[in-house]
Image (cartoon, rainbow, N blue to C red):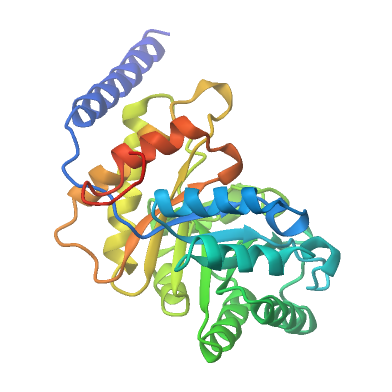
Amino acid sequence: MRWTGWAAAYALGLVALVLAGAWVWWQQEPQARGTEANALWARHQWVGEPHSDAEYRALGELLRRNRITDVFFHTGPFEADGTVPARKYRYARQLIAAVREYAPGVRAQAYLGQIRIVDGDGLIELDDPDVRAQVLKTDEVFLDLGFDGIHYDFEPIYPDDASFMTLMKATSELTRSRGKLLSVALEQQTLMDEAQPFYKALLPRGGRYHQPPRPTEEFLRDVAGLADQVAIMTYDVSLPTEALAGWHFARHTRTTLELIGDRTTVFMGVPTYRPLMGWAEDLPVALRGVRRGIDDLKRPPRRPFGVGVYADWTTGPDEWAHYRSAWLPRTAKTAGG
């Protein structure tokens, strides 16, 4: 019992040291400012429901004011056979016309995905060549409608998923032949590539969003060679203090930009919602953490980079105001502040 008490005290001491060290690190004000290459995940209603001209004008103003360059408009999800029923995006043409009129230069991308079948659990079987072929045909439908790119969000995707990479290669050929973009949302990188076998062996696979897998360095480099943009879903941190959550965003920003920032445009996902159980993750913490990560870079990436705001349906005026004041470059002309 005495040894148990000593072990517990030792463990608590280590935890206290980690928390104290993180708190001290967190006090330093970031020097880096944000960028004007930023993305936004947008709700399905923009393509699935009618909107007034005033609503489209307001959307355009929001995108311009906040220097959003790319919007991932939810247009799916895919059905199991790789199709998307036309009734789900019946107002897509009106949306695209409105974005071009009220937010010229902003790229509207078709946000498509589904729960990938892994070990028998999920909804879409990417291992099936016929399904992948139909996914490509569906992509063509959205490009024909006028979308500026295809944004994939299949989950879960493991680094050894050859079928997903086959689909990525085929989609890249399609989008580049049309002069369009291919972007993809991926989970945050694993802390150590060597831990990937433990994720696969010990944790459940398939059926749920935002669980491991975590991309390895090799996988991220391979994806970055095919995609024009990679959005890292850095949110859903579940850490109890602002300092720890901020460290999470800083670390992933630095490591991701160092790894693939010369190959592709990177968006670090930041949340505008409060997670369950009172965890410390929120937009101010995320933006501050991303800026600290930029501070740690030895040099800026060669390709554009920024943040991806998740999501338009959880972002209110206060969050947008903080985003402008804490993230956008001070030289950016943001109407109204």
